[in-house]
Amino acid sequence: MISNMQTLVGIGAYLIAVILIGIWYARRSSASPEEYFLAKRGFGPWVAALSAEASDMSGWLLMGLPGVAYFTGYGEAFWTALGLFIGTWVNWGLVAKRLRVYSQIADNAITLPEFFSKRFHDKKRILLCIAAIISLVFFAIYVAAQFITFGKLFSYVFGAPMLPMILLGALIVMIYTLLGGFMAVGMTDLIQGILMIGALLLVLVVGFFSAGGLGGIAANLSRFPRFTDFFGIATPKMAGGVQEVVNGVPQFGPGANYGLLTIVSTMAWGLGYFGMPQVLVRFMAVKKTSMIRTSRNIAVIWCFLAQTTAVLIGIIGRAYFPSLLGTGSEAENIFIHLSTSFFPPLIAGIVISGILAASMSSSDSYMLIVSSSLANDIYKDLFKKNASDTEVIWVARIAMLLVTVFAVVIAVSGNQSIFRVVSYAWAGLGAAFGPLVLFSLFWKRTTFPAAVAGMLSGGIMVIVWKNLISKAGGVFAIYELLPAFIISCLVIWIISLCTKQDDKTIDEEFERAKTAEF
Image (cartoon, rainbow, N blue to C red; front, side):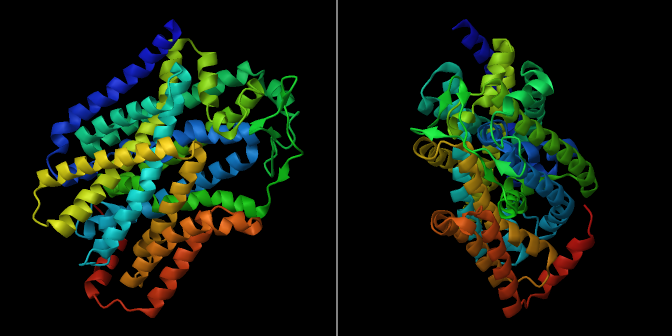
């Protein structure tokens, strides 16, 4: 009981800090929708970089990714992390500056759906509505994954049921996001990004020596076929849904090959970056385009360190606790197990707060993006064009409450694997928005009908491939983001060639965006 209370104190101190940040920025954020939704384009390089990366990685980084490495070895975890690292690097280098400039040229668009609409001069707001609906569906799934993280964390540490812990986490995130808007989200994400990388590095270093160093870890893992094979994957022997353990040793099958198609499919995670609103909106919020290069360097270094340590923590966790976690879902608790084993309760509470930081930095962004789409893009643009700034902000807050409730329902009734839930939402957003972002920014010939068709085909194909086509197995069992992304690109390209863009102003704005600086 005493140790649990000390852990709670460590976690509680962190939670109080983020709520105070929300209260601090509450008055400033209510000044205007641009302030509330985009911090009035006032992010410096450190805030932009760490906010983008912290909101991107979520609880998946400290639970989902180490869990995959713990359960099946290097294979899937390594190639997933590599794809995400490359995606981060390319996204910051290719998209960030152009989107920052173009979103301001396009009548100062402050959300991604609004950018699409204004980029193509969509007076009927068709693109805006489709994008807002897609955001609502897939971001609700994303938020649910973060709430599952809250539930797993608190139920493990305190032995409490999942449901009340999910509700507690949802309530805390909603409070500071409701109050402080995007500036509060950005500043808490800065703190959370630092806490996440600090927690990962600390657990990695202590875990490495506790597990016997390089020699001890290698000796322990050598008993598990293909566990350390980058071109293979370990296959745990399951009995009754749990991995078999004989005399304290977890049992594995002979393993399986991780072929070229599987590697390409796994690395396709990186394609998702081009369509992630929580990352793209950080590009739009950078104060000056001259700061983007610094932000990119910070983001890429952070991403490399974070993902490398997350994978290695899962590997070291298997060497240190070889038979402790018997399912893929349970394996996602390995970071918590290591933290509570290595550190005194109070320090463990602070380290475990890294998981909360990861989940909260993502869920706050998702909730704000969805509420901004519903309030600014749908309510104001479609139903009440003369709505006051204060009215729009309050509608956003009500929408945020509804999104939170929707996500809680998904969290308590759906898949309990954080990695799998996140992968589905990531694919949906990446395929629906990613190709259109690239074509909108870099191909002047892209037309409005192509934009609509590309967005719909990408989002729909993720659902169809995941739930129908992938069931055929074999080559069709690839990650749904890859085929959906390709199909969306082809649809945009073909329909653009078959249709015309008659509005010369669109072409003029495109040319300005190629060279403008802000």
